Structure formats: C-alpha cells, structure tokens
Length: 286
Image (cartoon, rainbow, N blue to C red):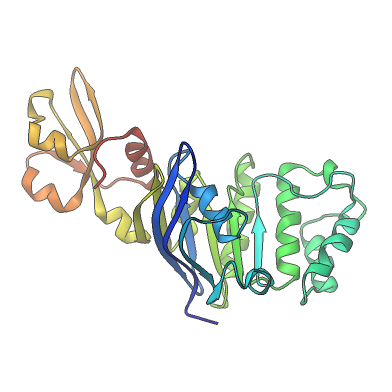
C-alpha cells in the first residue's frame, strides 16, 4: 500500500447554503489524524465524501492509492467506520448483526469478532437497541477489527461517552496503530482527546481548510495575544482572529509569525480547543 493511506486534492462540494471549498490533505500510513473545526465546519461532509456517501463536485480522493469512486468496493474492504450514531438495526442481536455484515468483507474473521466481543464484554445474544452509547461504539469497533481494517474513520466517536469509556477508546486507538501499518482519521469536537493521541491535525472552518500538519506545528502556528483597551491598534485589530473585547482589555488569536511586531503584549501558546474557539468566533483567518 502507498505511504499515504488517504489523500484529498482540491476537493469541493457545493450545497445551497454551504460549500466545502478546495480541501487538500493527506494521512500517512501509521498515524492518527484529528479532523477538527467548529460546528458546521465541514467535518462530516468531508468524511461522507471520502466514503463516497456524497458525490463531490471537484477534486480527487484516494484511499490506499485507490480512487474513492471508481474503486470504492476495493478500498472499503480495508476501512472501518465508526459514526456518532448506531447504523445497525436495533432489533438485531449482535450475532445477527455479524451474520448480516460479514458477507460484505472478504477477510472477515469470526474468531476475531468473538475474541473482541469477549474483550469488550459484549454478549452475542444482546440486542443492538439495548446497548449503551459506549457499547454501541465498541460493537462498531469490533466489526472494524474483525475484517482487518487498515484504516479507521471515526466521526465524533467519543460524543456522549463517559470519561472512562473515552479513555478506553483512546487506548484502543494507540494500540491499533502500534504496528505502524494502520491509520486513523478521528473527527471530534473533544480536542483534549486529540492532544493525547493525534500525530496530525486538519482544521476546517466555514468549509475552508485552515491548517493541516503535525500537532506541534499547529500549536506553534498561533499565539493568544492580550492587552489593555488602548493597546488595540487598527493594525493589530486587523491581524487578530476571533477578537474578544471587554472594558478591561482584549484578547484573540494571532499568527505566531507576527508576534515579533507586538513584543510588548502578553502572549500564550493556545490549546487546540482555544484555537478552534477563536477561529469559530470569526475574524480574519491567518
């Protein structure tokens, strides 16, 4: 398989009220990438385009070097998907779910599925509709692991999970990529999870690509700048992303490369959460 398990080049999707515009990024083999951005940024649209659940208007998407449209069946043999809602029939038992799903995969391993269920303490006799949110997520992971998926695509998998279950999931993802031959695309609004496990980050806002690169590069790209009200010059105001003003001062996000022009101001390295919040608040995108 190719060095990059996933590549998007100049991908565009038009809706009546939203455009995913010219998105390009790549996920290398053996790594976890966080896909982040404010609500409505285009994260789920991007995932649906990758999985050919939506028809793109422009651009190229390849998975394992395979065209995502022309070779959809081939690449999906090696992709496991975990959505934020249960895609299986509530009235099915877990055993019936396996019976319905397994024929779609050439490399399905019943013994792997059984072992994974045992590890997750899931009974094959339990109905899907009786599973908790966390247990449904574990069922989806069990199915992904049982056809030897080389890449996981996760859309808000930790939403609504308790801290213990979230912690278990993060440990699973780190274990999953340990052999260097698997990758994860992890869309989430819980950015503290990503700071623990992600190697790369792709940041979207308003359908546009704001950043793609390593976690360290993202955290070094921006600074939070603060000052008194009278220190907010017109030039600085133009540079700030998501400006917040009060009677006692101002703060916002600024490109770190411009900080040399504002050495007298207070500045801090932001968290990923703060970057998303400031960009989501609006302003000039650096």
